Image (cartoon, rainbow, N blue to C red):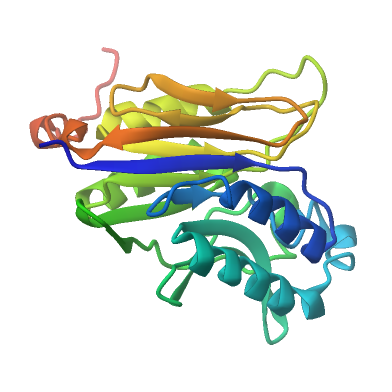
Length: 262
């Protein structure tokens, strides 16, 4: 019998008002079935910092109240939620993923590969993490979070797959200029296909999106998507039996040999 999990990318606008952001996320969480795994955008709770000037706009004092609002929704709906937010650690600020579970537990991942505008302003994390999520009828599902431009670096995703992750969750805040080329979706499809894992990516709702919010299967095929400047949900009930280590087990690591033209 297939082991299925309902996954959802929650596409919402992002402001610097944590309570407004929380209300927008809760509105979508309340539409999900019990047991779902949901993903909200990078900076989806705190607002997104694009350089040092934006950091002053983050309402750190309001974040605990907004997180509590999300926890109440998670408890009520029986949904596991991965949401992006900046968190202060003394004088340091981390770009973080917070995982809220219906059991009341909270797990935090801090972005390792920072964007150029974040460097010198945001403290990078040092550890990749996986989160074991209990799902009725499917046992424990291991989920691995990554943030935005971390999709450009395939090595951590490979490590997370080797560590048993079945689902990648990608919290995105990719917005650019009209007509600007972006390889984001191609990167996402590659990370899913090369590791034969499901991938759920939630981007901010914006007219100039550089990647839609998507669910991608282990072949790299987009199986659900929502795009543009409206709130929405890209959701799919995935079959965990489609996950495979076929490619991982076939890798041959050859040595590098220097050759010179005679």
